[in-house]
Image (cartoon, rainbow, N blue to C red; front, side, top):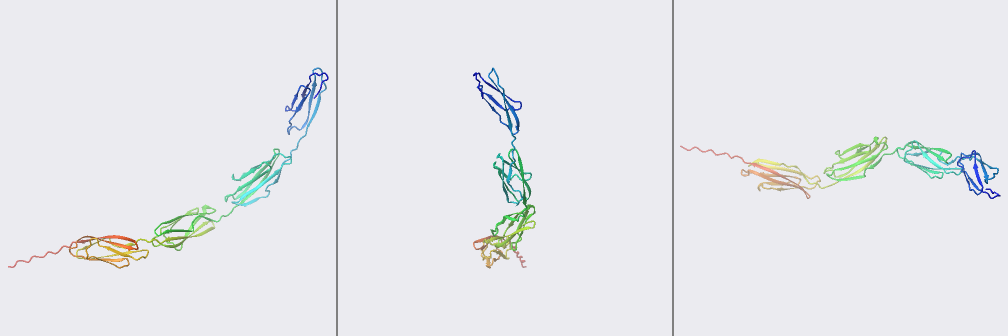
Length: 374
């Protein structure tokens, strides 16, 4: 600021030989002015600013202002805590840790994470206050050595830190994925189910089957890689309790499981095992037809005889043990076609069969005529 005794208008002019163009000077044309310079970290040094004052008639000696910008030394930030020793975990476990740092000059801090071999499943969070957190859920396939790289920065300095991580291989025991403790079915009903297991190395994983009491009609198929199929068609004679043993094997590791199988008793209809389809005889012959049936449930058997169009001379004898005999003494007049029906009965179940009987006509001898007497 300046004054003029004569009250003439005053001007202030600014000039400098070494100050940058970023300097701002304003002459308010009333004997006052203002100087403003936003220095940077690169402006350390000595400078001069020259100001000339004039009232249009006379000038006074200029004012030279010396300006010294001192260099500011920005100290580097420093790590406060991070895992400086190797981290060791088993495959499948979680790797997690925190990092923290400080800056002597109070500048904002950032932490950047990078890695050349860690997977993308790693999660890192920089809280922008000099702290951060690292999290990695390893899998059974992640065995190996890894390095996590961190860069701490305050805008002027970058301080690196490396964390070594070792994931140990875990030899997994085989485990069943799909195999029930028990299965059941009825006599005559197909039983089939899928078996699934898991091993550390699928290529070396397979399943074995054995049983001390299941019939050899079982079909067991091992598809490899821990999958197999079991199929058994029980007969009407297979009611009972059975045990199937399955062994899941992977390398030198194995696990065995016994499975209970129950075949429920179902009342089956009786079956004919001996009965002709048809019978042919000549008129006058004795016709005897034996029939035999069986009940696999060992229930009592009876045979009902339905003569259809047979004459009363045809008789049937039921022996009460699933066997019986039809007897018919034909005569010369019985030529023709007949049917007889037999019903094998067990409890309320039955099996019916009809037999065709053909009686063929027999030619009768003709009498010779006696010669007339002389």
